[in-house]
Length: 177
Image (cartoon, helix red, strand yellow):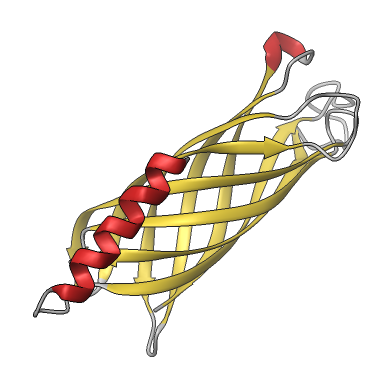
């Protein structure tokens, strides 16, 4: 995490000393949902849905975008998995985002996350947080942009099944430049 912070400071220093300003800081936030299989579903013909909400993730962060192609950000959030006996966590992590394509300001991107996950209870210890995602950023009429993302999350939790909790989530959020 210290290496990522050092890289962020170096890039900010280089950008402030350059003459051309193609980079800019931003603020971001998102709300992600994970679906899980309904254990009460007995098959076709019953009134139970096959998938039910299993977790919610709330994220906020700030960062810097370089030449409309690469972005580095620092994020914090709250995760709650009610599907697994109400596991809650507070991840803090760094994100490296790469814009694959851009069309009139709208971008298609991939991103990777790495950081620390803090647990508020003593049932499980703190652990590591990893993530990978794809998504699109839709340009708005002002400085607000809409995000739609599909993310894979891995939370390292010692003592949990296989010492980790994996999930795939669909999220919607914003970026403010």
